[in-house]
Length: 64
Image 1 (cartoon, rainbow, N blue to C red):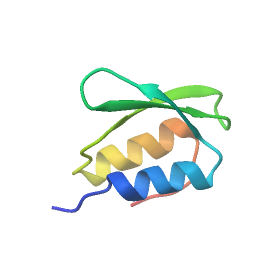
Image 2: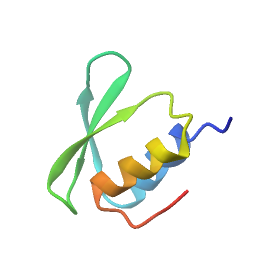
Image 3: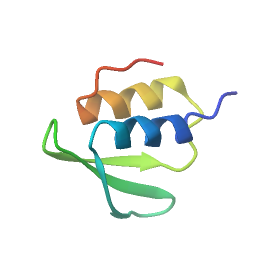
């Protein structure tokens, strides 16, 4: 299985999303200026469906 976590964080940073804080468990909270919403990002993203859901929630047009 592929590990999407590093690539997701890189894409978020490149699209001006900012890290806000640590969340519950192994999640981090990021802020997306595109949607003006907070997005939870897991530290172990193994599924491309989860990675795509994070991209959709943050308003970034990128598909794995």
